[in-house]
Every structure is written in structure tokens, then in C-alpha cells.
Image: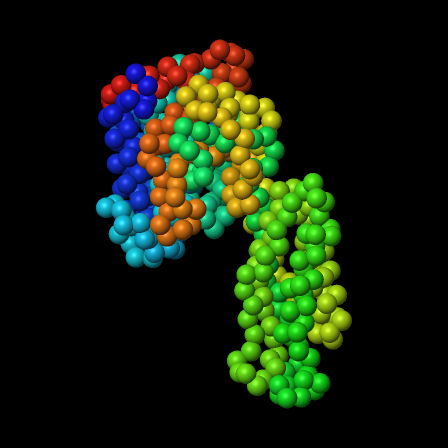
Length: 401
């Protein structure tokens, strides 16, 4: 019997996902979510590891025979968005919604824990389960790393639902799969004056407008056509009246890149453009950076392992386009090699849309993939190429213990 035919476990995971969806919590506030995860794991006999996290938790399966450590990660936080899905299990909290599918990710990792727990005596190592808080603020991965939960980890795996991939497929690629996400805010200081006598002042709005135009040349003239980058100004603020040239103009936005070298060059040229244009107009400018996570870069070895695990879990492997969205899973990959994949969910809306939803038929597939990835990795690391059979792991899920 396959996992998708395992009605009790499938129903249990859907119930978990819907409970989480109806009770979302923002980044750093996931107290009830953490308590619920702890209880679901306790019911399955999964041991909770002692790592100092305010929200989120770490659990472990295996280690009875010693061996290497492999980590699986799910993010647990929601977004400050008013839900518009109309679902019967829609958010009960005004202005808070699981609009990125972290409820799906959490339920999938609990499902993987169930499958792995049933084979615990056979595991040639330890599977560490990272239920991470605060991904949406790009702070949670750093908290987990600071807690020590990545120490000793030989490989780390994660997934993200992908609305534009069909259920039954998984997107896997070597190299960058998600972008570095940096934020900027530029403050231009001029000299205010009456709008009728602009020569008496230094117009920060004209300066800012020229900056916005010049910044677009960075990608077209400083980034190779074989690479990619995005520079987007998303907000411009200045002035309080139609007849006053203001003292100050402020604009902000984001830069997305897939390569650390390109990332550094774009930031360098950005500051050159801002400072140069400001000087040309007799104004001054300051750039403040909000450094986001680096690019998510999959290790070639573990991307191959992920593909093997996906196929054993009955999924079709495709090579996806990299996403320009950011993901702090990238920080784990700075600590240990691994792979991050996209799991097809047939969504009608993109991430962060108020009507975002996933096809729950993909939930048992996600659980099976995560369990398979851990089993495949442990088998490789322990020198047993055959290793435990992930398909057999799924087949043992006939009834919940």
C-alpha cells in the first residue's frame, strides 16, 4: 500500500494542515503553533531535542545505531495578510494568513516524522527535524543555527510548495534555485524652497528621479547577459504640498541576485550611482541596506540524491526555473551541503496572494519525499548505497500507531 492510498495518515496530515491554516501566527509569535507541533510529535513517540528556541522546535529520530546526522526543515510562520480564500478552514485571525504554504510544509514534515519513526530501528543515523520560526522575516534560520541545531549535520534538505508545478512533480536543480534578497532605502537631502523659485533650492525629487532612471542601467550595463539580477524601486516619498519643493526625498526597494559575485557588484554600482547623481545635483544621499538571505545554492551531490529520493517516492522530477524570491534556507546551506526543492501543488494564486491555497493531494507526496530524502542521504553517508528503501517506508504507513 502506498502513502497516497493510506487514508488514515493522509487524513491526519490534512487535519494538521487545516488546523494550522485556521490558526496562523506571525514570525516570532508561533507559540501555539510550536505547542501543537510538540503534541503531534509526542503522540507519535518522536523525541524533542533540547535546543534554546523561543518558538519553533527541533526533534530527532534514529541515532540508535550511531551514524551520521541528516536534517529536514519546515518553516512554520504566517504572513500579515487578510485571507480571501473563502475556505471553511480559513484563518480565524484577522489580518494573519498562511499565504505561503508554511502550514503545508509543517504538516509534510510531521508526516515524514511518522514514516521515519516507523523505521527508526533501521536508520543508520539520525534525522533531525527543524521546525523553523520566522522565515518570512528571514530571521528564523539564523536562530536555529545559533541554537546549535546544525552542529554535526552532514546534509540538510527542505522543500517549498510551487503553485505553477502540477501535483506529482518536484522541481530539482543543481546550483542556485532561489535568489539573494536585499533591501535598500535611499534618503536624498536637498534644500527646500518655494516651488515658484526652484533656483533658490536643491530639489531632492529631481535628484531621486534621475537616480531611479540611472539605477536601471546597472542590470543592463553591469550584469552579464549570462547572469541575472533585478533592481526594483517600489516606493518614493517626498513633499507635503503642491507648491513646496521639499527638503528630502526617500525611496526604497529590493535587489535580487543568484550569484554572490553579482550581488556584491550590483550593490557596489548601486552606491556609486546614488552618490554620483547626488553630487551632480548638489545634494547628498545616504543608502541603508537591509541584507536578506543569500542565494539558495544546491549542492550537486545532494541534488542528485534529492532526485533519486523523489523518484523513489513516485514523483516526476523536472528542472524548474530559479525563483527570484528569497529563502533563509540559504543560511543552512552555508553550514552544511544539501538541496532545496519545489513540490508541485497546482495553485491558482502565487505565494503571498490573499487567495493563495494548495492542492492537498500533494501533502502525502511531500511527506514521502522528505522521508525518502533522509533515508537516501543516510544510506549514502553510511556507505550503504542500497540503504533502506524509501518506497517501503511509505508502504509501512498502513495505519497510524
